Length: 220
Image (cartoon, rainbow, N blue to C red; front, side, top):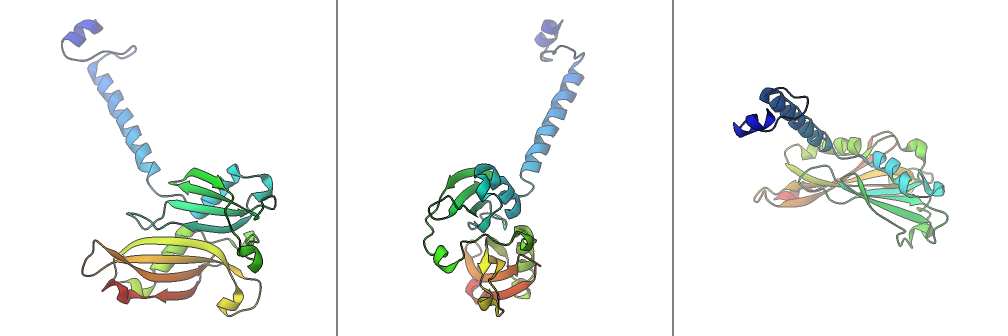
């Protein structure tokens, strides 16, 4: 029977399927499922804190959750970066650090970076986990709310989470975890090009804007 139906151009009939409409329904459902999976996989990039949890899978117990720095490369085609580096404190490493690189949420590389200056300044110590409450996506949203950016077409960002000495922030203490959000906007005369318009610093503890250093004249 299946051979006769196939000869009539109706295609093969699989076991358990009684008609061409059943086959088509099955194929349509499968296509929808595949489309849904694709959409879900591109719905949003992993946040920095999600990547910290993922980084724990690739380092020793002594380094897990011992975040020293998280930074991204400049985003491409979207405001959300997808290349990230998670740097963790590792007391067993010569320079006390292990770095895990991610691309689109997937681990790309694990290495022990050359970090010579940080141990001298003390910034190689892990950030206070209790103060890491504001993730990268929220920090980016906060930065983009700056009034000076209202009229600009924002094109890209790069984020870095690290300790900033309280002397820099005008207060005393060992330093606070801060998101440094670097931003780019389309040029007015040539929108195909963009310009670095500066940085916004956002507290990783409470999400407040700590500092703005924006130069929107660069888009001219």
